Length: 338
Ligand code: FE
Image (cartoon, rainbow, N blue to C red; front, top):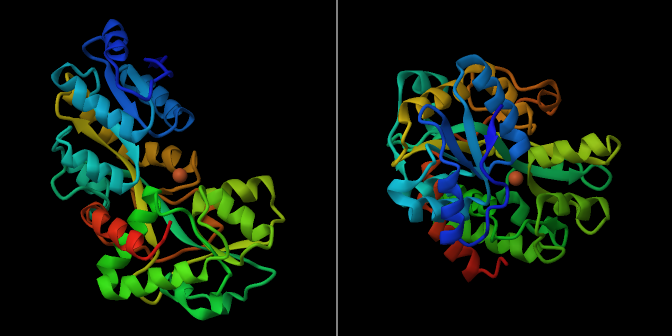
């Protein structure tokens, strides 16, 4: 059985919280993970790992930002051996906060392609999430769609719904557009998007699709697993995914991933867990639990995800999404993308 340290991670990293975690100090051969990936997505994996290796995994879930702050505050006293989070922008940020130690074993290198890993080995992508175009099959012809940039064209005037620029997913997508097209072209695209918005940006990807279904707009951009969740509940929904930029850069992909903490007390166990998570066996579970794509390219996606079709991925190294994050935020602020 895996031991859960505490669900109630307070938003503030208080000394009280630190005290409570010290009391549940893990056994020395246990591995302790701080995760912003949700409990139901990690718990089955940890259980399987424990079954195979006998190594217990303790975990604590919370928001990525809070957990990074906690790791910084705990410093050398942290019980965490591994930090798991979603989005390369957040992994990159964690890397800049000096909480990871470099790990790039041959196993990890051969399981996970380099564009899904930090160039300095600080973090490793473990699942791939594709962020692409979703559209109303009632009001949009597939042949009218092509690229993220095309959503800036006047033919989509008042027909576009987008997620808020505050979300890290949006920041990483815009960073990739800056990387692929340069700042000037990216500015034109974001400006066009803002002009084409049918409503103020949505708080969630699911809201983008709800707005399309309600007839408020015709096209949007979402992570495909949100589409998967919606279609599971409502198989007849007149919505479809479109793979963007297939003749150019490819679909913007991002990762959920993990790194070994700088102050890990069990770096060997944590490395063993990270290697196992990158293996074909774990990857088949890891991605399919959330209808994501495996980061290990040697295995196939699950059947539901495969049914959405094959596509070309943008192979930009995902650390660039982090490096260009501040530029993306500045650009969106300047152009009024809320
Ligand atoms: Fe998400």
